[in-house]
Length: 175
Figure: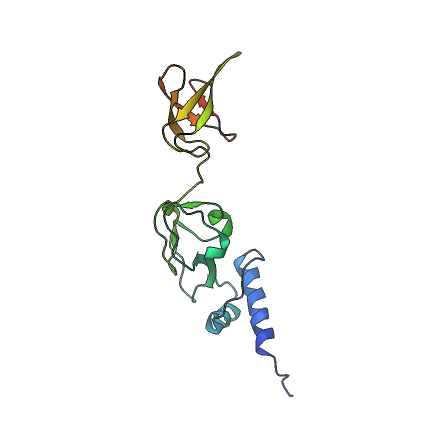
């Protein structure tokens, strides 16, 4: 029986498809140039595919998929706990510290993008039963949805603490 020769690129494409299916990665993953990593992915059906930085990502920088690369872990190697490795965990997040190429991304090194910036004018609402009081305030610190931030009332100068809402307003008091 004579074996049909298989082209290298067809083999690499097949290995990539196997790695994508086994690793549960979305279709935007790029083919790796490292042939040995592709060979590992084809030999290991349950090979874990992770995303790591392909360049230095600086604190305060929003993480984009172009700054990440896909790698397949060698057999027997498992990612540490509390690291972000999937696109859903990384896309649109902001680095809290410098992220180095080729290293795992600790979940503690990421934060949500600020919904309100420090010094921005925002609407503040106090809601109690049927009573709603609104005022304009200036944020004294940045915050994401759900964060507790301090604001200064523009009219009275009083400093209040409130929760950042998904629409960018601040809710103070009881609700």
